[in-house]
Image 1 (cartoon, helix red, strand yellow):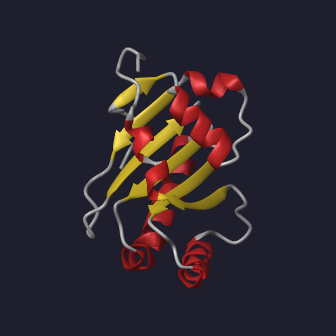
Image 2 (cartoon, one colour; image 1 turned 30 degrees about the horizontal axis):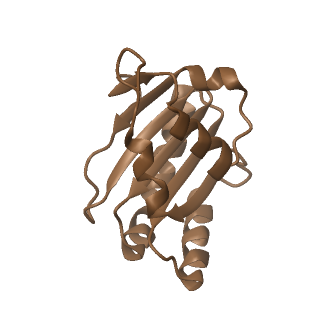
Image 3 (spheres, helix red, strand yellow; image 1 turned 180 degrees about the horizontal axis):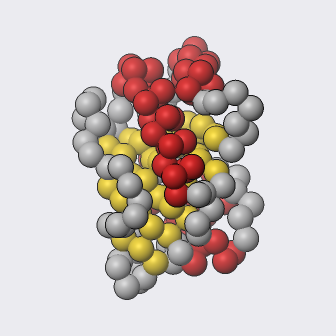
Amino acid sequence: MSISVPDGAGPASAELERFVRGTLGCTCPDAVFERVETREGPPLPGGGRMRRIAIGGRLLVDLIEGVLVEDVKRDIQAWTRSGRIERDRAGLNRFRLVIGLDGLDPADAGGIQDAFAAACDAGDDRMHLHVVESDAIPALHLWPTQDGRD
């Protein structure tokens, strides 16, 4: 999936900027949030959905939602590799894979983290995994329109 022809492009919504700074811990300067490109991904095999967000020519965020832990365990390596390839192809600095799940069991969290780490290249410290409660993601679907207005 490419980010070259976005579904929506413009400045970040307040919700997206809060999420990226607060939830994901991004310390990007304000100017980065002036240009955001979003693209809806294809439906996921388990029935979930993916949204790819390129922020300010620096940060790539893939949001995954509507999936079960079993789907994550099965597909996380493919999602991680896809994000790394897109990050590098687009010349971006960082990739953050964000997965929204309901009530993640701590026993599953370790397996998800291990699968993510296995899919990362050794020494690549520019890839990050964030597992969040699924209700943190729906507000982010208020994407900018083509002319930059929310």
